[in-house]
Image 1 (tube, rainbow, N blue to C red):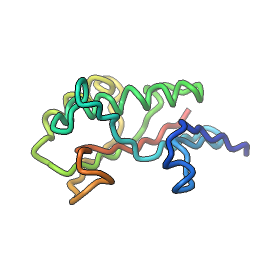
Image 2 (image 1 turned 30 degrees about the vertical axis):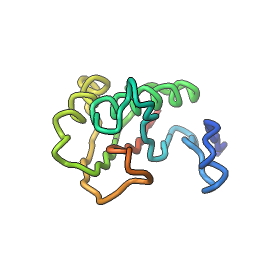
Image 3 (image 1 turned 180 degrees about the vertical axis):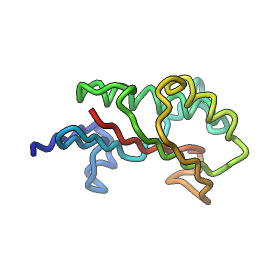
Image 4 (image 1 turned 60 degrees about the horizontal axis):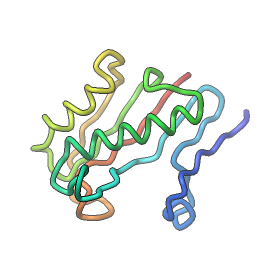
Length: 126
């Protein structure tokens, strides 16, 4: 089967040897994605804005593969603060209220940088 890699230009892609998403046949896996924390629209203490930003960015990556958020069957949400569940859930629901993929919400000690509260992985089947 043909393999299609989606690169986004992140310096981490070459440093770590990964890509944002891989599609093989009808399966799409999206790497763990964090928000672009700009200090204005997306702040280091705003789990809702970080989650929403991640979902918007991944929606675009999926579109580049001719896939939609309706094709997502699983999300894995990692957070450094489980007390943000309500904010994360509200943002997740904005994209997936009707789709209802399976999901997990995991409390972890750290992400790659202290300003990140949330990281999400995605699986889609077309």
